[in-house]
Amino acid sequence: MIMSEKCKQHVDSCADCTMLETDGENLIMHRPAQGGNITAKIKCVTKPQMATVRTKTESFDIVVSGGKGVSDSIDKLYELAESLGAEIGASRGLVDMNKTPYDKQIGLTGKTVSPKIYIAIGISGAIHHTCAIEGSTTVIAINPDKDARIFEYADFGIIDRF
Image 1 (cartoon, rainbow, N blue to C red):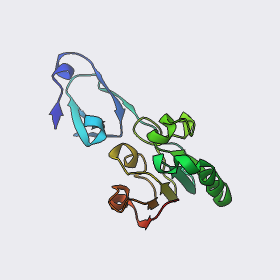
Image 2 (image 1 turned 45 degrees about the vertical axis):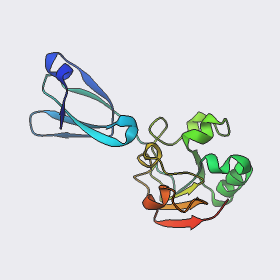
Image 3 (image 1 turned 180 degrees about the vertical axis):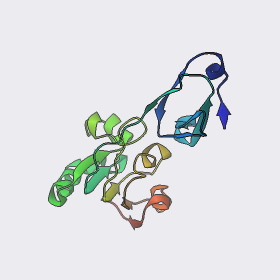
Image 4 (image 1 turned 60 degrees about the vertical axis):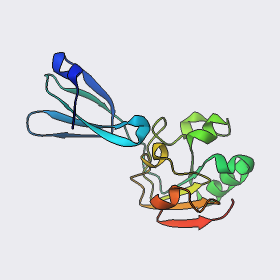
């Protein structure tokens, strides 16, 4: 547990929490740290105890999401999503390449989704992205790199180009 010295000295808040809990007296806040590679548990011992919580977007039945690996076939990504009646999602890499708008970005710096089926195409599986799809019932990954981290997270994986 990380005890914030700053939090001991005056009223403070913790932003972008992904979970809150209590020990019966103090608020314990969970938030991404070190670029999303770990989750920090922060206990504030002052009153009032404040936190902002990352909100989840509505749950969709299906989300088809693309990463840098689909940058040359973005039209196929949109066609697949349309044929499945799915919502479109994107990794930060694809958004940074101006291939999809920011409001489609899924990840630490985007939104969180919890669909019944999440299809990750050309997404490497960085923790920044996978932390935002934890609520998905089933994750299907398509990636030509057999060692891509997304396969460790996926329920089903296909090693191939899209």
